[in-house]
Length: 86
Image 1 (cartoon, helix red, strand yellow):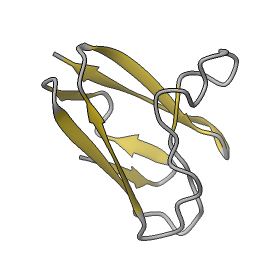
Image 2 (cartoon, one colour; image 1 turned 60 degrees about the horizontal axis):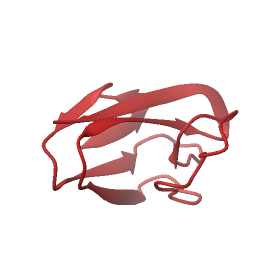
Image 3 (cartoon, one colour; image 1 turned 135 degrees about the horizontal axis):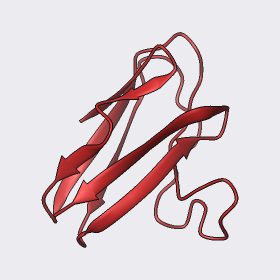
Image 4 (spheres, helix red, strand yellow; image 1 turned 135 degrees about the vertical axis):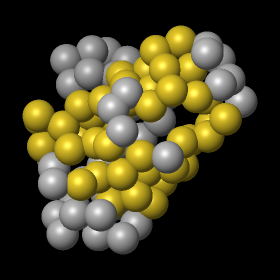
């Protein structure tokens, strides 16, 4: 489970097992989103994209395959994170 808090993702990185889900909840007073990949990669948003999450809203994604999945908030460039799936 991840949380937006003070314009950062917590915890970061998030470690889970294949087949598990991560739910992010926006605990900030600003809008955020969760977009897979990196802003400069062609794969941006192909794995998952939450759309706009206002304060108190959540987004979940299930990770079926092991690997490292970077993600970011497109509204706040410094907000980046990783999900490590074992």
